[in-house]
Length: 128
Image (cartoon, rainbow, N blue to C red; front, side, top):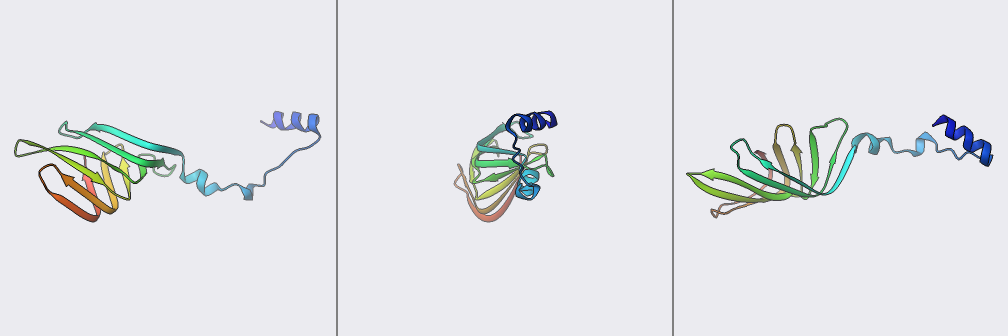
């Protein structure tokens, strides 16, 4: 890298410097990976399928197992009294721990179940 800068200065007689203060280190440190239309598909501890989709997702350096989600939605299948129930979920934002499979949902959390149950809350934690 240094050799390129030295060579460039010899060829062009100019070096354009970017001051460190112009670089937004907060964005670099907190947004390691960004995703659009993020999708996570898997099975829970009992082998039931789930699918989580988000408008966007990002991982941070400080929490590598957490995906921060914007407008998450999806389906979670579960068994209750030997009947398969599909829950459709949505929220304004969320966090998905890819290691522990814990989904935290925040703001306007909605769950509509195939058995007719409906939930509307500000926060919800789902262990997948």
